[in-house]
Image (tube, rainbow, N blue to C red):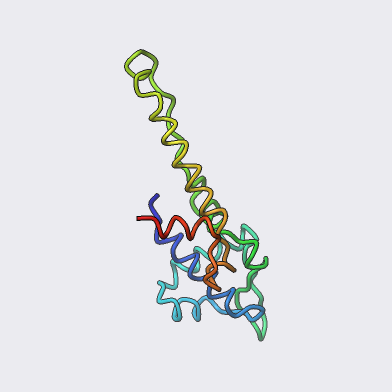
Length: 144
């Protein structure tokens, strides 16, 4: 899976917001603390706001806040909001005997997609903040 800068920046911004909640942070403060390009971050925040992941508060305590608890915002959700489905849909296999001999290849792709979704849908902002990744994710990290 290729992680785009948009996904990386969105997750960094969301983690920064989760760390200071219920306080708000301006896009400028987020850009400065996370070392992100401001205009790019503002576009990302607009998408996150449209998806109801963040809210923009105006007035003296202006800035962005999470619109959901950090436990409810998963890495998979953020990826879907910004980039669509994270697991690749593969084209239908060509008909014929040549493909029949490697039919299990499609099963491997399906298993890989499922494993990817099992990880990104299990890890929330709260998990990332406190470093307590789900056990099955920790097990994958320690494999050699």
